[in-house]
Every structure is written in C-alpha cells, then in structure tokens.
Length: 507
Image (tube, rainbow, N blue to C red):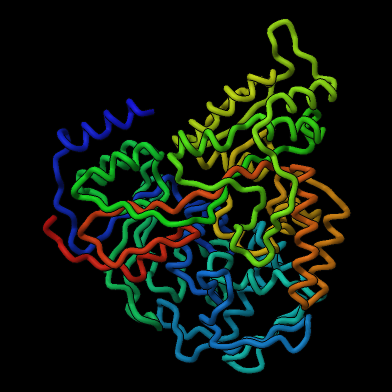
C-alpha cells in the first residue's frame, strides 16, 4: 500500500493536467448511484446523504445527538403515546405548494399503509393515527409508547413529501430543502440546483452535480485535475495521505460516527453457532487494520452507538485479537482442521469499493490463521445491496451511516419486528430477551430507565454477536481550494453544501 501511495503522489505531482471548473457548479464525487431518492424508500448511503438536501424533516440532531427544531418550531409530548408538532409557517415545496400538516400526515401514513413499499415502515409501526387540527399542527398518536419514533422524525431518517406522492415519486422528487432535484442518470450523475423559494438561508452554491465514480483512484485523479471539487469518506487512507500533498486540495479530518461492521447470516448452519461467530471476531486484528489500512483514521467500536452517546455502554464483552482463544472455540464447536489446515469455507460478499475489498482480503488472511477459508465475491454495489437486503449471504461487510446515532437502532437492526422487509435485521437474529428489553425501554419516558435497558441490550448483542462492530471511521473531507466555509460532520453527510461557497473560479 505504501508503494501505491508513492505512485499516486508521483502521478498527482507530475502527471496531471488541470481543468477549468464550471463557476456555477460544484461537483461532488460519489461511489455509487442512490438507490431511490424518495426519502421514504432509499436507505443506502448515497440516498441518505442526498435526500436531506432536497427534503426537510420535522426535527434535526445537534452535534451532541440531541433534538432541535426544524420544520417543527416546537413540539410537546403530553403523554407517552402522543407527540404534538407545531410547524413553521410559510414553508413551501420547491414547486411552490405550501407545506402543511396535510403533507406531514400523508408522508407518515404512506409509510405504513402500503402507498409505498419500504423497509422504513418498521420504524413507524407504532403510529396508530395522525391528526391535523389545523394546517400548522400535527398530532401523532401511538399504539404503544415508542421512544425511537421521535428520532425517526429527524434528518436522515425522514423527509416530508407533498400530499399525494405515490410509488413513482422517485422519478422526480419534490421537497422543501435547500436544493431542488433536476435530474438523475443511474450510474452516472445526480444534479440538484439551489431552490428559489427555500424557507431558510439559501445555499451560496448554485448547482451541485453528484458524479458517480466507483473507482477510488479515478476519484482522486478527478480531484487533482480540478474536474471535481469534493469527496467525503471516499478514499483509502493511503490515498488521503497522497492527496494532502496536492497544493490544489484541502484535507479536513474530524471524528465520525460512521460504523463499519460485518453482519452474519444467523440462518447459516455454520454461523448460527455463537462460538464460531466469537472465534471470527477474535481472529480479526482491528488495531493492526486501523494502524495500517486506515492509517489511524478510525477508532475501535464494541457497540453500534458512539461513545459520546448518552446510552452508550462501556461495560460490554470485548473482542480483542486472540487467535489462540479463537482456535480453542472452533475446536470446541467440533470444527477440526483438515489435512490442508482448513476447518471450513465461508463466503463473504462485498461491494467493489476499494477499501472494503482490501479489508476483505486482510480478513481472509487473518481468518486463515485459525483454519477458516474466506471466499470473497465482489459485486457492483446495487447487486451487493440487493443481496444484503434479501439476506442472500453468509458474511457481508456494511456500514451504519447516521442511524446508529440514536438508541432505537437496536430495534431496527436486531428485533424480531425488524426482519426484512420491515427493517434492517438482515442477519435474521432472534432473541426474545432483547425484544423484551426494547419493549420495556419503549414503555418508559425516563431516560435513566431507558439507558439501563439499552445497556443490557448492548451487553446481549456483544455476547451473541449477530454482527461484528469493527470501528467508527473518522470523517475525511477532501475539497478543492476554490471552496471555502467547509466543515465536517460526524455522520459524514453532505451538510457542508448548505454553507460552502465558491471563492475562486479560476483555480
């Protein structure tokens, strides 16, 4: 990898011509096309990053994962089954229609009544009805207390769509956000423009082109040439080191909450044994991978929640690198080494993302030391993601982006109610005790009581290992110097486009 970094540096410093950028367009490089820009449906990383630029949510998270106003100026909870939101007056969709309580009700109803088919519906399963006593008031009634619901009314989890938006809404999505949708060419680009009637401070950038460039080296060269302006969390660590040497570019790094993990298919006859899953976790040298592959740009995780979160648990079962213990567990599980030293084969499906493929190769080498032969199959992202959603895999690397910033992630990822297509329990993990704890947390309005439940949930998950939490990635933003007022966010989203400004069109 160091040789690769040297070659890239040489290419950047001596072999790249420059391009004159469009003064009215900022080009953001993305790894893959968003699967669906209907915010009720799209759950892949690109959809969840682009949608908040087109759509607004009722609430927004602050830097410390707290709740703040957005479309709703204020809200109250008269009891643990009722939420009342008071909408900001004068908000309009990008086509000029006023945004009212009727649109909020339609958005929520369509998520659960079959208007759209989406795995997001599970997050709103406890909404029994939505009342709209006037155009600016929304009253949400719940069939049972659900502390996670309010978090699913925040940015990244939902966007308010116009009344009547149906299943074909994704073809030309209309929201109330700072940018309006212009066009999308799958596997090529998404174009948005500054909304003329945005209800808050409008962005300074006139147009944004999200250009799909799957290959990381090509993305780096596009930035160096000046034919692209920005990419976030889009490069292997060695490439980031090379990009730092370019006088044209700025590299900004901040703490992140994007979580890399490996999910197990719990229906698999080998992986359903907890000892096997534990042995795999103990066979992965995460500290070595962070130090070498990621160049220190990450921190180890043992929970879905980041350490800064109020519900994070420090006292969970840990999984340090311990191949001797892993071997003992595999022996105890009855998987003896064959003459070739192999106990069994496992298949890992991955996307074609370069860092993911490198991680898979490293895991393949490390697991081989305990007698597990890892067979890697890489697929174009849409195919990989479709197989992940359908549960047609044994092991698969994946990421949580934003969703793991609120504790209801445990329900969405691991509860019986969140089995596909109603949620993201894609490994088909089932644990009645965990479900009871999540239900108990939902019944309580006391945060300390909820935290006690969530701590126990994290302890159960750390023991059962339906997935291996690897690390939280740092947020790494690489941009052209013609852009100023850029800032990173823990979620690694595109919020910087709200404030960024083009200051030098000639560079």
